[in-house]
Length: 161
Length: 281
Ligand SMILES: [Zn+2]
Image 1 (cartoon, rainbow over the protein chains, first blue to last red):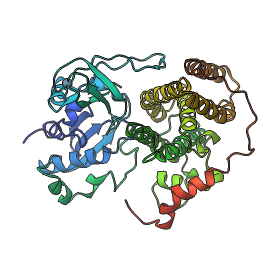
Image 2 (image 1 turned 90 degrees about the vertical axis):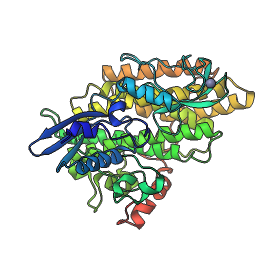
Image 3 (image 1 turned 135 degrees about the vertical axis):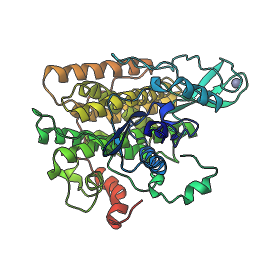
């Protein structure tokens, strides 16, 4: 029988279906106990409406793989950061036309940024580094909207948090 | 779980998949919500309720911009900020209910829904700033700047709270609020340092918000003073960059815990839940 971890690692994110929850760094722990499987996940954003879908997808994947009792727990701490997106996850994002995040800001005092900091985000379509920010908010909480000045295509960028 | 097409996903015998519309579960599901020893549960609950009410009402005001913002990008931005705050509200109200169940109205609803939809205006603890009726974009940006600057400074302190749940909510919130504050600040500067008309309206928006700033800072101790200083420094930076004037401090137009704007807001927000108490969505 496949391990519970291996099964849980195949479950994809409802909003970024090209990534597994493991790629995204949302899957924190999978433990097989005598009472069943305990899976621990963490939300990307507090308003993330996909948490229920994740819980449900994890449960049904594990049930289908023959695991009985499945308990999906949520942890908020330590808070999710885009640094937890794996190398494979970043590659899959780029292949799907979504620019992966750079390094997340470190702790300490948070300066106000009145102009969007110039970021070197390469266009996932043509590779040009000459891209501009359109909006720091986009179709989902975790992505910003940018445009490539070389090929003029808009694209999404997973913003660093 | 992946599907070959959307219809397959729709027909799957698994209703909770449609969490975007149905089956909201306890936002603290699966978390350890015991109150640590040495923490006064009632006091913790009260703090969470106040912080949750601020987020809930502010979120509602931001949602009013959906389909009414000047540009699609801003509509999406304001909806996202509203969603972040709604997420904070859900966690904070649920935390308040777990810490002090006596706060929750006795209705057959989840704790967060009972608190959001079945309390009267006088039982809400939000600051008046968030309930003021909007409609003007410059005013809304001024309010969002004040709100997110204050809340970010506050949450950075709550990260060291003795309650592990509140600490975790604050740590996540800090990341979100950083984006909210930048967004609002950039609009205030853009409008303030824009055309004569945009400048005039931005100044008017700031002037309208300003009387409600003082009530955000009612504490007397050293840390409360540091919080205010931090807030003032950020506001001064934005006001200068936006070629605006620090508003004169005028007395708050109405006395009492709430303005006349809260009741109509709640009437709208609570109407569906009250008309159909058994509905699920
Ligand atoms: Zn390009």
